[in-house]
Amino acid sequence: MSEKVAVSLKINGKEVTLLAAPEQNLLRLLRENGYVEVKCGCEEGDCGTCTVLLDGLSVKSCVTPACACEGREVWTAAGVSRQERIGRLLRDNFAKYGASQCGFCTPGMMVTGVNYLMNNGVPDRQAIRAAISGNLCRCTGYKKIIDAIYHTAQELRRETAGEGML
Ligand code: FES
Ligand code: FES
Image 1 (cartoon, protein in one colour):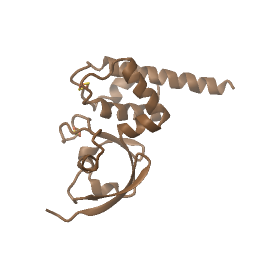
Image 2 (cartoon, protein in one colour):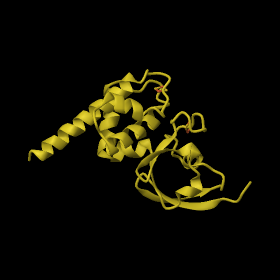
Image 3 (cartoon, protein in one colour):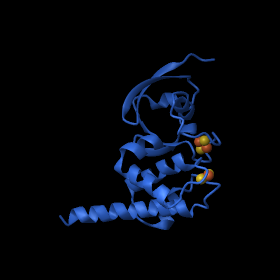
Image 4 (spheres, protein in one colour):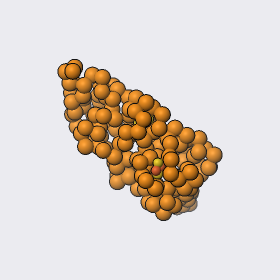
């Protein structure tokens, strides 16, 4: 077994230093250190359950080397749904529109949804469908997930329009 190296990063707004094996992926490093909301599905970059924000962009943590995250900022679904305005709104709309059944895909879907809303935010079902195309869900048929993201985008747009009128 290779010797572990210290990796300092900021996770959900908190500075931490974790020990990672050189060959370890970010997914396993996070789960080993209690961030078990980051789910492990395929571990081959195909299912999207392990999606996190890395320096503001969604990445699949199972294909992201842990040692490449030195000095970087990571947000998991638990972090964004508690601490970011967009994440809280999206979390509430996941509940309201029934976008989660077994819940296994939900953390990855939440992070991908937050990434979409942060970088685009257009309430457009086709664009949302394309944005979540890297995240698989075996339960919902995707419609309710798209509804939740779509209505969040609409609400954020209404808020922004309201601010513009002040
Ligand atoms: S576990 Fe990372 S994409 Fe499936
Ligand atoms: S809610 Fe079960 S996999 Fe998506």
